[in-house]
Length: 190
Ligand code: PRP
Image (tube, rainbow, N blue to C red):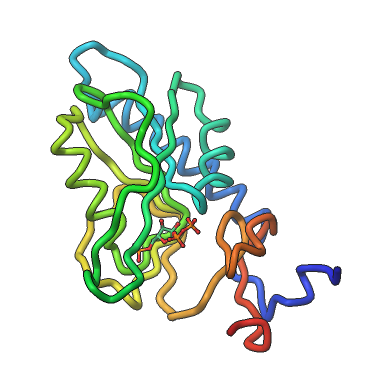
């Protein structure tokens, strides 16, 4: 098979840029939770990173390893309804392994686009009585936002409506393993 890189029109965020940003995010998050009292768990347990399958896997893996504080992690999978009967609705495909009542949850996303996924998750986690729920997304893509969501930690803000792949993000399940984030050449879309 041809090299995946050949299908990329341009690189938006290089491997080095992503590495630096992940390091910065981890430092800021670590300082916030340590010094500014965002951690509200009455039992003082480590923060719980919740990665959203499958796109967030690569980012969460790198982010988690940058923390010097103790963290735990879990994974959840949700999917958008695509049949048009419930526009904007999302459904739970795989739930968390354990209850999150009383926990300090940090949702980890690769990209926030319409905002529907994160809005659903924030509501769901609040209903489960998490002590605190914050959001970290590597990319905040603003062009197609439908739900106004507040994102506590953003790696990169993307204003153009580009279809991006790599570093966990796919097109038809490919390109997730690229170490950078880029825009696909149009001939490889559709
Ligand atoms: C992507 C991404 C987010 C979601 C964001 O996942 O990982 O979870 O879309 O989009 P939204 O803000 O419009 O809800 P996707 O459904 O493509 O699945 P994947 O993570 O398995 O690639």
